[in-house]
Length: 107
Length: 113
Image (cartoon, rainbow over all chains, first blue to last red; front, side, top):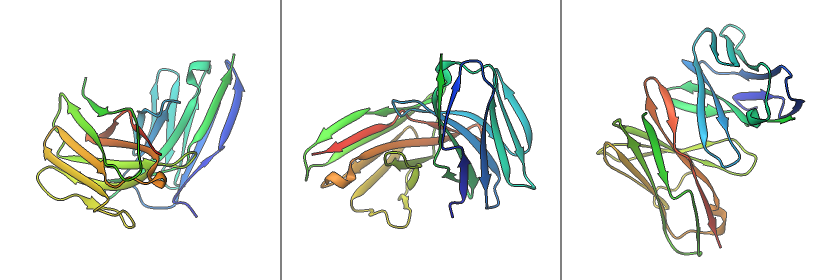
């Protein structure tokens, strides 16, 4: 069993829909990261969370430490949000990555 | 702003040759850089952690003589894939810790023919 599990693996939605991507982990962590990887491969760090909730524009990330679960939400989704979203957890200064969720937003 | 610049973005090389990938921290000093490899449709896997002025720490199963890492200055870390083989074809990406988070290079897609 992977230490970091994401769901769904693939998600296709219409423009404007509310998107939720989930991440569960099985190890103790100091922080959880949400990353965005575009088709070219480059990775952008979206959030780093150790508790509660963070919001940046149309993106919201939450974490429940007791349940070892985090969610990434996208409101009013847009085709430019199409990318792979990766959850990664921080343990001992090393990141362990989920396999990613491939999001496609259709105009 | 502070970023990590990675070059080249893609490279094709012949089997048996060596390829060097560079990661430079711009506008900040990176005492530690991480090197990852990503196979298609798989998650990133940490290969090694490079520390400025000392030997890199390799993850289990990563051959240190094949993947040479040098972190000679606070702004430059390099990964050299030696005697490249087609199964080394992959996406390689570096990252550095910045302000308690991580910043990533843009990645290098290596194809060995």
